[in-house]
Image (cartoon, rainbow, N blue to C red; front, side):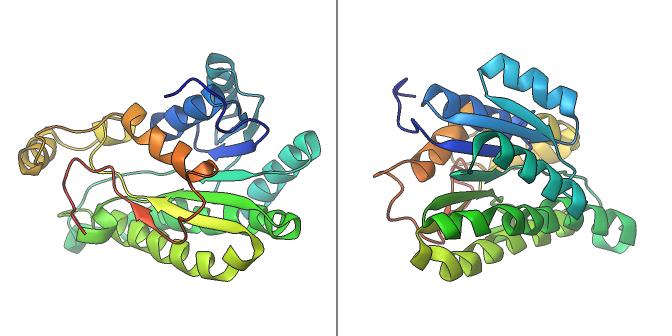
Length: 248
Protein backbone atom coordinates (compact mmCIF):
# COMPACT_ATOMS: atom_id res chain seq x y z
CA UNK A 1 0.00 0.00 0.00
CA UNK A 2 1.11 3.55 -0.56
CA UNK A 3 0.32 4.66 2.97
CA UNK A 4 -1.15 7.78 1.39
CA UNK A 5 -4.69 9.06 1.16
CA UNK A 6 -6.21 7.66 -2.02
CA UNK A 7 -9.57 7.38 -0.23
CA UNK A 8 -9.44 10.52 1.90
CA UNK A 9 -12.92 11.81 2.66
CA UNK A 10 -14.66 8.63 1.50
CA UNK A 11 -17.06 6.76 3.77
CA UNK A 12 -16.80 3.01 3.18
CA UNK A 13 -19.06 0.26 4.48
CA UNK A 14 -17.31 -3.11 4.45
CA UNK A 15 -19.82 -5.92 4.90
CA UNK A 16 -18.23 -9.06 6.29
CA UNK A 17 -15.28 -6.95 7.36
CA UNK A 18 -14.50 -8.70 10.65
CA UNK A 19 -12.38 -11.40 9.03
CA UNK A 20 -10.74 -12.74 5.89
CA UNK A 21 -10.67 -10.66 2.72
CA UNK A 22 -13.15 -8.14 4.12
CA UNK A 23 -10.90 -7.44 7.11
CA UNK A 24 -7.90 -6.89 4.84
CA UNK A 25 -9.90 -4.50 2.67
CA UNK A 26 -11.10 -2.58 5.73
CA UNK A 27 -7.50 -2.21 6.91
CA UNK A 28 -6.29 -1.11 3.47
CA UNK A 29 -9.09 1.44 3.18
CA UNK A 30 -8.23 2.86 6.60
CA UNK A 31 -4.59 3.15 5.55
CA UNK A 32 -5.71 5.16 2.53
CA UNK A 33 -7.69 7.65 4.60
CA UNK A 34 -11.24 6.31 4.31
CA UNK A 35 -13.75 6.52 7.13
CA UNK A 36 -14.52 2.81 7.38
CA UNK A 37 -17.49 1.18 9.04
CA UNK A 38 -17.28 -2.58 9.46
CA UNK A 39 -20.48 -4.63 9.31
CA UNK A 40 -20.64 -8.20 10.50
CA UNK A 41 -23.16 -10.65 11.90
CA UNK A 42 -21.36 -10.29 15.24
CA UNK A 43 -21.21 -6.69 16.45
CA UNK A 44 -18.46 -7.56 18.92
CA UNK A 45 -16.32 -9.09 16.17
CA UNK A 46 -16.91 -6.02 14.01
CA UNK A 47 -15.99 -3.71 16.88
CA UNK A 48 -12.85 -5.68 17.63
CA UNK A 49 -11.68 -5.45 14.03
CA UNK A 50 -12.64 -1.78 13.84
CA UNK A 51 -10.49 -1.02 16.89
CA UNK A 52 -7.59 -3.01 15.46
CA UNK A 53 -7.45 -1.19 12.12
CA UNK A 54 -8.63 2.28 13.10
CA UNK A 55 -12.07 2.09 11.51
CA UNK A 56 -14.65 4.73 12.42
CA UNK A 57 -17.38 2.35 13.48
CA UNK A 58 -18.96 -1.08 13.56
CA UNK A 59 -22.52 -2.27 12.99
CA UNK A 60 -24.32 -5.57 13.36
CA UNK A 61 -25.71 -6.93 10.11
CA UNK A 62 -27.15 -10.31 9.14
CA UNK A 63 -27.16 -10.20 5.34
CA UNK A 64 -29.89 -12.87 5.17
CA UNK A 65 -32.40 -10.68 7.03
CA UNK A 66 -33.70 -7.63 5.13
CA UNK A 67 -34.63 -5.75 8.30
CA UNK A 68 -31.14 -6.26 9.71
CA UNK A 69 -29.51 -4.97 6.53
CA UNK A 70 -31.77 -1.94 6.39
CA UNK A 71 -31.26 -1.11 10.08
CA UNK A 72 -27.47 -1.37 9.80
CA UNK A 73 -27.36 0.84 6.71
CA UNK A 74 -29.64 3.39 8.42
CA UNK A 75 -27.27 3.42 11.40
CA UNK A 76 -24.29 4.14 9.15
CA UNK A 77 -26.14 6.88 7.28
CA UNK A 78 -27.25 8.48 10.52
CA UNK A 79 -23.69 8.54 11.82
CA UNK A 80 -21.86 9.51 8.62
CA UNK A 81 -24.44 11.12 6.35
CA UNK A 82 -23.68 9.03 3.29
CA UNK A 83 -21.85 5.94 2.00
CA UNK A 84 -19.37 6.41 -0.85
CA UNK A 85 -18.08 2.85 -1.11
CA UNK A 86 -19.86 -0.44 -0.43
CA UNK A 87 -17.85 -3.65 -0.21
CA UNK A 88 -19.79 -6.92 -0.12
CA UNK A 89 -17.50 -9.54 1.40
CA UNK A 90 -19.78 -11.62 3.62
CA UNK A 91 -19.79 -15.29 2.64
CA UNK A 92 -19.63 -18.93 3.60
CA UNK A 93 -18.02 -21.93 1.94
CA UNK A 94 -19.03 -25.54 2.48
CA UNK A 95 -18.32 -28.65 0.46
CA UNK A 96 -20.58 -31.44 -0.88
CA UNK A 97 -21.30 -33.21 -4.18
CA UNK A 98 -24.53 -31.97 -5.72
CA UNK A 99 -26.15 -35.41 -5.54
CA UNK A 100 -25.59 -35.45 -1.78
CA UNK A 101 -26.35 -31.79 -1.09
CA UNK A 102 -29.38 -30.92 0.97
CA UNK A 103 -31.70 -28.11 -0.05
CA UNK A 104 -30.86 -26.45 3.25
CA UNK A 105 -27.12 -26.42 2.45
CA UNK A 106 -27.80 -25.07 -1.03
CA UNK A 107 -30.17 -22.39 0.23
CA UNK A 108 -27.90 -21.22 3.06
CA UNK A 109 -25.08 -20.57 0.60
CA UNK A 110 -27.32 -18.74 -1.86
CA UNK A 111 -28.89 -16.70 0.95
CA UNK A 112 -25.56 -15.45 2.30
CA UNK A 113 -23.33 -15.35 -0.77
CA UNK A 114 -25.81 -14.00 -3.33
CA UNK A 115 -29.06 -12.74 -1.84
CA UNK A 116 -27.06 -10.92 0.82
CA UNK A 117 -25.34 -8.94 -1.94
CA UNK A 118 -28.72 -8.06 -3.44
CA UNK A 119 -30.05 -6.88 -0.09
CA UNK A 120 -27.07 -4.70 0.77
CA UNK A 121 -26.98 -3.16 -2.71
CA UNK A 122 -30.70 -2.47 -2.53
CA UNK A 123 -30.23 -0.70 0.79
CA UNK A 124 -27.12 1.34 -0.10
CA UNK A 125 -27.18 2.12 -3.81
CA UNK A 126 -30.24 4.45 -3.85
CA UNK A 127 -28.46 7.10 -1.79
CA UNK A 128 -25.46 6.82 -4.13
CA UNK A 129 -27.73 7.39 -7.13
CA UNK A 130 -29.30 10.42 -5.44
CA UNK A 131 -25.86 11.90 -4.75
CA UNK A 132 -24.60 11.08 -8.24
CA UNK A 133 -21.56 9.10 -7.16
CA UNK A 134 -20.49 5.87 -5.48
CA UNK A 135 -18.55 2.65 -5.81
CA UNK A 136 -19.78 -0.90 -5.18
CA UNK A 137 -17.27 -3.74 -4.94
CA UNK A 138 -18.68 -7.26 -4.76
CA UNK A 139 -16.41 -10.12 -3.74
CA UNK A 140 -17.10 -13.01 -6.11
CA UNK A 141 -14.76 -15.95 -6.82
CA UNK A 142 -12.97 -17.51 -9.75
CA UNK A 143 -15.20 -20.52 -9.10
CA UNK A 144 -18.09 -18.40 -10.34
CA UNK A 145 -16.30 -18.41 -13.71
CA UNK A 146 -14.92 -21.95 -13.93
CA UNK A 147 -16.90 -23.95 -11.36
CA UNK A 148 -15.52 -26.25 -8.72
CA UNK A 149 -15.99 -29.91 -7.86
CA UNK A 150 -18.21 -30.38 -4.78
CA UNK A 151 -18.93 -26.64 -4.83
CA UNK A 152 -21.97 -26.31 -7.09
CA UNK A 153 -23.80 -24.14 -4.55
CA UNK A 154 -20.84 -21.81 -4.01
CA UNK A 155 -20.01 -21.66 -7.73
CA UNK A 156 -23.62 -20.86 -8.58
CA UNK A 157 -23.81 -18.13 -5.94
CA UNK A 158 -20.58 -16.48 -7.07
CA UNK A 159 -21.60 -16.70 -10.73
CA UNK A 160 -24.76 -14.92 -9.62
CA UNK A 161 -22.70 -12.20 -7.95
CA UNK A 162 -20.84 -11.62 -11.22
CA UNK A 163 -24.10 -11.43 -13.16
CA UNK A 164 -25.66 -9.12 -10.57
CA UNK A 165 -22.59 -6.89 -10.77
CA UNK A 166 -22.82 -6.52 -14.54
CA UNK A 167 -26.57 -5.86 -14.55
CA UNK A 168 -26.45 -3.34 -11.70
CA UNK A 169 -23.49 -1.59 -13.35
CA UNK A 170 -25.60 -1.07 -16.46
CA UNK A 171 -28.43 0.37 -14.38
CA UNK A 172 -26.50 2.90 -12.33
CA UNK A 173 -23.33 3.91 -14.21
CA UNK A 174 -25.16 6.82 -15.81
CA UNK A 175 -25.77 8.12 -12.28
CA UNK A 176 -22.09 8.09 -11.40
CA UNK A 177 -22.18 4.81 -9.49
CA UNK A 178 -19.58 2.27 -10.61
CA UNK A 179 -20.19 -1.37 -9.75
CA UNK A 180 -17.48 -4.01 -10.10
CA UNK A 181 -16.48 -7.40 -8.74
CA UNK A 182 -13.32 -9.04 -7.52
CA UNK A 183 -13.03 -12.78 -8.16
CA UNK A 184 -10.13 -14.05 -6.05
CA UNK A 185 -8.59 -17.45 -6.44
CA UNK A 186 -7.93 -19.61 -3.39
CA UNK A 187 -6.98 -17.32 -0.51
CA UNK A 188 -5.75 -18.31 2.94
CA UNK A 189 -8.74 -17.30 5.07
CA UNK A 190 -10.69 -18.93 7.91
CA UNK A 191 -13.42 -19.73 5.39
CA UNK A 192 -11.08 -21.82 3.23
CA UNK A 193 -9.66 -23.58 6.27
CA UNK A 194 -12.94 -25.51 6.49
CA UNK A 195 -12.27 -27.23 3.15
CA UNK A 196 -10.51 -30.60 3.15
CA UNK A 197 -6.73 -30.77 2.91
CA UNK A 198 -7.12 -33.06 -0.11
CA UNK A 199 -9.04 -30.37 -1.97
CA UNK A 200 -6.57 -27.65 -1.02
CA UNK A 201 -3.53 -29.69 -2.09
CA UNK A 202 -5.12 -30.55 -5.42
CA UNK A 203 -6.08 -26.93 -6.03
CA UNK A 204 -2.62 -25.62 -5.14
CA UNK A 205 -1.08 -28.02 -7.66
CA UNK A 206 -3.25 -26.49 -10.41
CA UNK A 207 -2.07 -22.92 -9.83
CA UNK A 208 0.63 -21.54 -12.15
CA UNK A 209 2.36 -19.77 -9.26
CA UNK A 210 1.95 -22.82 -7.05
CA UNK A 211 0.38 -21.18 -4.01
CA UNK A 212 -2.76 -19.68 -2.55
CA UNK A 213 -2.94 -15.93 -2.08
CA UNK A 214 -3.36 -13.95 1.12
CA UNK A 215 -6.05 -11.38 1.95
CA UNK A 216 -3.58 -8.51 1.88
CA UNK A 217 -2.77 -9.43 -1.73
CA UNK A 218 -6.44 -8.98 -2.69
CA UNK A 219 -7.08 -5.74 -0.80
CA UNK A 220 -5.11 -3.48 -3.18
CA UNK A 221 -7.52 -4.40 -5.99
CA UNK A 222 -10.37 -3.07 -3.87
CA UNK A 223 -8.42 0.12 -3.20
CA UNK A 224 -7.95 0.56 -6.95
CA UNK A 225 -11.66 0.13 -7.68
CA UNK A 226 -12.65 2.50 -4.86
CA UNK A 227 -10.18 5.23 -5.81
CA UNK A 228 -10.12 8.06 -8.32
CA UNK A 229 -8.76 8.27 -10.94
CA UNK A 230 -7.59 4.66 -10.58
CA UNK A 231 -11.07 3.14 -10.61
CA UNK A 232 -12.82 5.64 -12.83
CA UNK A 233 -13.05 3.48 -15.96
CA UNK A 234 -14.05 0.16 -14.39
CA UNK A 235 -17.73 -0.56 -15.04
CA UNK A 236 -19.21 -4.02 -14.55
CA UNK A 237 -15.77 -5.62 -14.55
CA UNK A 238 -14.58 -8.72 -12.70
CA UNK A 239 -10.94 -8.43 -11.64
CA UNK A 240 -9.11 -11.65 -10.89
CA UNK A 241 -6.32 -11.81 -8.29
CA UNK A 242 -6.41 -15.60 -8.60
CA UNK A 243 -2.84 -16.97 -8.81
CA UNK A 244 -3.41 -17.69 -12.50
CA UNK A 245 -6.29 -20.10 -11.87
CA UNK A 246 -8.48 -18.32 -14.46
CA UNK A 247 -7.18 -16.42 -17.48
CA UNK A 248 -10.24 -14.88 -19.21
